[in-house]
Image (cartoon, rainbow, N blue to C red):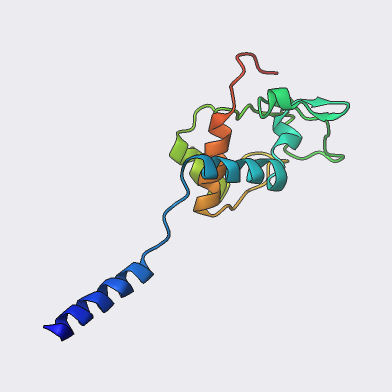
Length: 141
């Protein structure tokens, strides 16, 4: 009986050690997303209206005409769409997939200057969670 108890204990301990860590949830997820969006992804550089002092953070990620353009003729998106509250036409899962693959739900790719992000799933979920917390503006540029 003693061997059974020890074996069961060791089996349980091994099973616990092999479990994946719990996914980030709630406030830590949004905090990580805020860091990724604002410090790593540079999303405000295009998706937030600019002032002479920099991005207008009172209108964070609410869409904006770009303040720069290519010097040669290439396919180009002159306006960055609003993504605050989550991009229009995307489900949460589609947006997470977009951040992981750079592919839109219809299978197309966004025009430059939008980079094809390759976030891992955890970071994509964090960025999407943060963006979902931002208020949408009713009028867009």
